[in-house]
Length: 226
Image: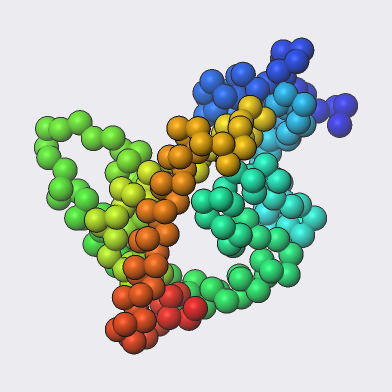
């Protein structure tokens, strides 16, 4: 570890202030420090992997040896629950096996038509001379594609709700990851906003489930498998 090169850090905060000020720019700036860059966010040691082989080792090859950050779990579980994104061990493997048929290569090939259709709809909706927030548009497009491909659900009306809920989750993760946060039970403006977005997201999900149950249709998608 002593041979790893670390960028300059502040005595108490470490790299926290640089990381929080502009995360993307900071991660780009530390690339010259090597394939494994040690950081310190307040009192938390962090290692950034800049080589795809190391990323593959952590996420795939030796995934059982690396657990998800408890900070990440505390930040996101109130919004998205203990699903595939946050679960670990045997529970994670059972969840993964359950949804694996939805990601068979033949199904993935069929998803291409959905991607093209929604992308063309988005482009047609853009005016020739207008300013567009590309991050919001990509978030909305992604939500529409995922919902149709995996749940056969058209969520164009709810895409903004989903995007806003995810944005809140990301913001919450940043706040809680910094160690500078209040418990979720305290009714701060942000915590109230989180609960509101959580309720809106749950309402949409339960609506999709109820409509599928009422129709009794088996479309072969992920929701039918569940």
